Length: 107
Length: 118
View 1 (spheres, rainbow over the protein chains, first blue to last red):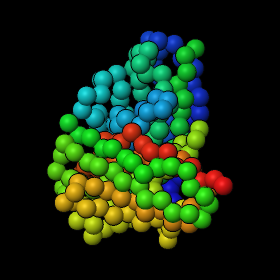
View 2 (tube, rainbow over the protein chains, first blue to last red):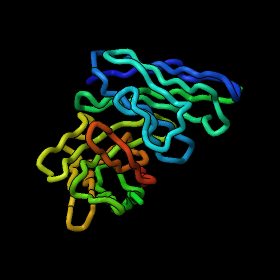
View 3 (cartoon, one colour):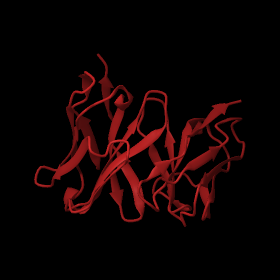
View 4 (cartoon, each protein chain N blue to C red):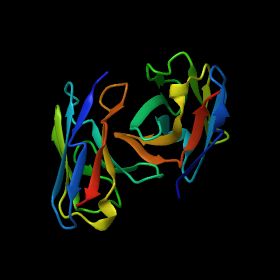
């Protein structure tokens, strides 16, 4: 299976900060990468697919980049609603796998 | 509006069985691939199984292969997961999630909790 490693595991930031989360794949996954946001007791929400395509309805402050084995999720100006856990997921090769998650906390 | 509603979770003893269901509405169910994903308490997400729109293609994660069976009834807009030989480590919230071309999971249900304990 392809291993997905996110960093950092936890991130403390303030409203208005620019935030970057990294996701590394154990082998090339081309652009088969998605990002999700999850709040406590809620289902995950799709933010980004195909590494850099913004899902409909998702604010433009979210962006994704990368290909191959290294990917980033950037929040250009952190808003109060963005404090949550973020997961990357590869879907290039079955079986699909997720990163371990990055919790974005209030500083 | 797309809606996915899971049901069937509960408390089951180790070695027991449980059948989860996911009722879909707001879209042409037969045209979409579907999946099951789970999340153990306080842990991350784990993809479990995929089924194509026609049920012709099915995949499983190694952790559930041979114990879980995914199926769908397009006439009833329903997705199922039959879980046998349950273990304590299968305790989790189970989500159904829709797949569209080039997009893995665009809609998720609210989840149903399965607890495997004696």
